[in-house]
Image (cartoon, rainbow, N blue to C red; front, side, top):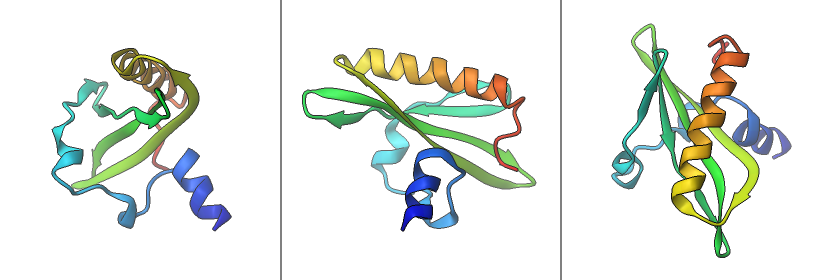
Length: 100
C-alpha cells in the first residue's frame, strides 16, 4: 500500500496506472524536449492541486510518470500553467532521465 502511494506521488506509473479513458485523452499535451506534458489539475474543495502526466515514447512503448505536487491554486487555468512550468523544470533537473 505504501509503495503504491509512493509511486503515485513520485514515481513512474506501472502499466495498470496508464489512463485509457476518453476523459484522460481530452487534455491537449504540451511538447517539451521529446516529452508530452498533460496538465490535469485535481479538484481540492474549491481549489486545484497541481497534477498531470509526463509521457515519452521509449523503444516503441509509451512511458508515463504521474506528476502530483502539494501546491494548491484557486484558479484551474493557473494550476495547469504552473504544472507545465514545474514539469519542464523537473525534466531539466533530471536531465530527461525520469523513466530509469
